[in-house]
Length: 202
Length: 187
Image 1 (cartoon, each protein chain N blue to C red):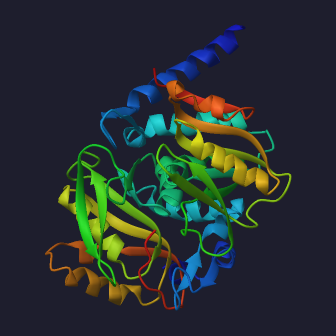
Image 2: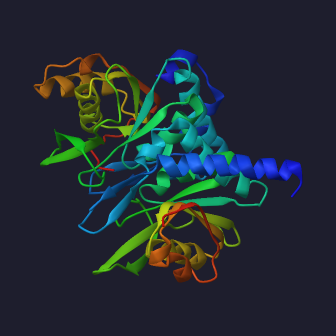
């Protein structure tokens, strides 16, 4: 995580301060981490994008894949700054034309993520972005989509994540039962949070 | 025009041509008879995507715009890069029950039934100058709802900005006195 690598980064405190916790949303017991106040602070929003851009600019990233909908808020600015394509990963039936779909497990039931056929070429190096990683279910589905298309997922990047995410992440990916290299995909988190958080849809 | 102005116009036209040609039309989506204007192919063309954002940024820099409101979900793709470049806040306008905490809602009419757009209370202060951004204007129903939300909290909507306009659906008329700026018109 950034805070471990850098010691004290003066931008990080403002980033944490700009995130609002909303209790009992979307249901009782869930402490929702709301990033929208950060978007109201242009300097802080700019810092977040810069942190990602500085990290990925020289990694030969061909495309940034953003998970609907809050991944759309961060992903395109990063893509534009590093000269990469932007690929929206969407809920079912939103993308027109030919898509590939990946189903993933929620606490109750399943959900589905889609990507356009032809958005990535085999061998392309991809960054996946979302605002928050909770259980990692959506990110795992995103990795599988990109790997099925023959791309190499270089890293998953999130603004926020649970401190214990690494252990849960590996367990989650292995429990899918799909043999893949997804468990080797590193995670980059700008800020960690300590509230208990369950899987939230976009 | 002076030679310099002519050259600028030419360069702008080249960019617009590149943007227009990067947009893919998908027939019969989401239902038979609709020719869907798909901007995802523009997003796969880094130069075209950058040019689109640059054209908006050039237009709105120095016009004292402090708010860029983007309509879920494709407005979230174009709005934030514009906001960041002009130093404005970004405000997501969302489908119901997506925004946590206190919101205001605006209902609007669809071809069959109604839909609803929400904005956070306190996101915008009275008197702020705002842009509304979406990928496309069709009938203008969603944009009108967005304008209403912003005006209800006392903001001034300076302009609506879209990549694509479908003129035959008369969305521009539906916006009445609100200016609309688009990069590409479908014929």
